[in-house]
Length: 279
Image (tube, rainbow, N blue to C red):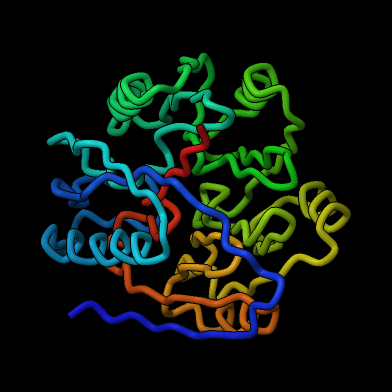
């Protein structure tokens, strides 16, 4: 059976924000190539176990009151389960993904077709980007990662499409190749992040903008503890990120810990499987 852990803390003043998310069942999940340091095709994987762990995440979101929408998985696209990489949505617009590696390139059109069929105004990308994996919304601005999977030029596209401030942040550790592996959005005002995942200029920018941020250590980040998702009151996190769990509890957040160890073999976790839909 899938194990979950839950901790509670006083949540006075924390009102959960309704969330709508897009997910993709990992019916074709395997690790047949290596495009990040987590992937090793020589290690056995279990599609059945991946589906079970994903289903627990799905059901956790439903229990929290989220609306969960699904995109059909495509045979041969091993990584399509990592829905966060499929695009970025805001104000009814969807900025499509243009993947770095050939193995994932067909995911971009698949997700753009879903966006169009589901009422979004779709913007086809010119520059390489991997969607919400490198684009997080905080305080009305878009925090945008670059350095491994998303080009700096794509940040100009974000500004033009959404007419929002874009804060560019350079990632420097290949283990944390997407922004959502090095940073978590806790609520409309608060973030958590691993300082060592960013270059000096980006760390300075984050320190100025978020002096009250939770700084997470490498032990918790290395189990993709920051690859988490929540509604402003409850954070769904990797169950092995026990230090981060304590930090969240001290700030008054509830936590639900899940085991997504099978999907971690592909370099993804909770947030990677979760694309927020903002209509």
